[in-house]
Image (cartoon, rainbow, N blue to C red):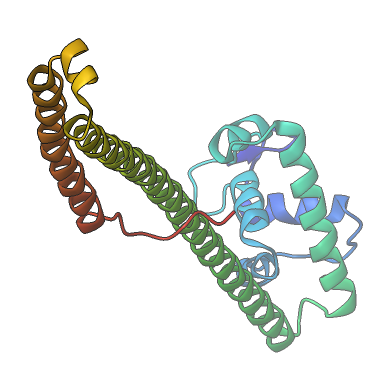
Length: 237
């Protein structure tokens, strides 16, 4: 409750009547049901502000600052919301009338439907926003996976290329050693006198044998790499 200038305590209906009169309504409002019907035509936030300001359903009327603390807005913003609410209700009083209860109820129902539609639209936007975020997150995960797959593929290709180059080098060396051994075995008596035949041939044959081992190892490495070829999508920006 709040006291008027004469010191008398004002009821919520009296406070409401005084405020709507201040907003420009010259009629008299003394019925709580009319107050409820008029307030029902407002938005939920406006209903809350008006109800708290006149102490509707409360033990006392709240100040602008107290309402601002409750809602989380400044007292100047609360004042603007209250003024707008009373302008709306003044329009209803002038254009619909306070005695046409059915019309007031229809306005309240329209307001409820509008609020429900707005809530549904807000919910749809939130759902769509969540879906968009999930889609972006999924695309980011897929892009990262493509990058990782591409990195694995590049590393595999480098290892395979290195193994194949090593395999080719060993084959070339083995071919050269085979030619060298044949040449040594077919050399004349003068060459055999200058360079001991067995020493050179044995050294070449030993290296050729080692090349054979290394060629087999390189071939095994190539086969292993082919068997473990990485799978996954190529990167696509």
